[in-house]
Image (cartoon, rainbow, N blue to C red):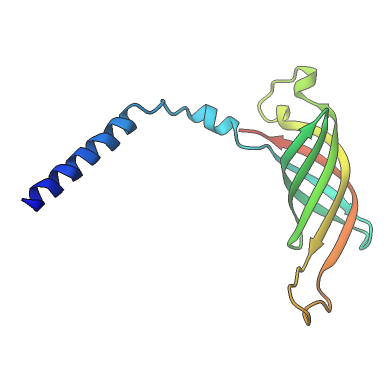
Length: 141
């Protein structure tokens, strides 16, 4: 008798879950993709090493044209960027497929590479860098 009640409970529970899944909202791929933050590509000049670095960042926050970004640079460096949007191809009405991704953002970046955790690991590690940055591509799905 216990087995019958157990089977009935499992069937009833499965029906409740199935009913909830069947009444879920429809899934829109374009709506889901619009929630993904923009991926920005650009270059930065490392003032301390006098070298150019490739940046790849995503938008964290945006307020009145000023954007906070986080990402990585060449040489396995974690970076943060504060940038300001100067111009965009979309602002000028350009709708050519690849060209409309162009966006000029200027800013300042700070990065940290070769991160070492622990007391004896700090020698030749934990390198800080900073400098100006320019973002040229803004890929938003």
